[in-house]
Length: 230
Image 1 (cartoon, helix red, strand yellow):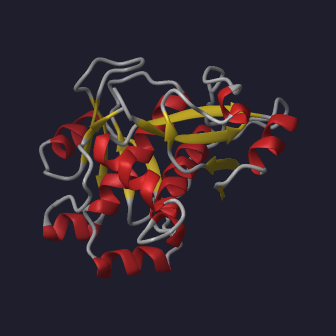
Image 2 (cartoon, rainbow, N blue to C red; image 1 turned 180 degrees about the horizontal axis):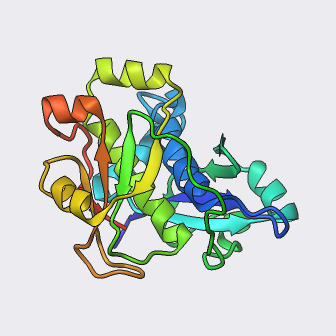
């Protein structure tokens, strides 16, 4: 697609200390929220134009992994690093689909097969529920969590955003039980439907975003981008 931009997300995966899968998904969601709330990405900020262009055409995200010197080079590029539990993720301003910075383009997409070695902690107010019927790599699931967080942000009014911001934009990611998933998909809450570029079939519902204010007011997306992405 001409002019299409993507949002690069880089997860740090050192050989000896890979992050927990749930932490990586939560870090990806937090990274997206942090970027969207950053003054550089709004108004006349230096990242505002590429963010607007990216949202207009789609909200595609690509997750790559880095370790050692690769990770240190990534830190020299414009972006924001967030930490959630054992996971570090760096988000960069949107880039053209076919013209990535060299130190990002050389990173691998594969190799994000993370697992949880411990039971995730208590849920917060904002929960991103993952479809229990889909098998996704951690990288794919991280992108989907980022989409769901973005839809939740778009659907939140200023009062809700202030409250969320006051809690550090905290978000938890959990895999739903099948019965709960069926309820969530029919709830009217923000739901990610995948474009089908990688791993899963087009139109698959991947993640549902849940928060008290989204349930109370109904989901009315405030962003300009489509709800279908990959």
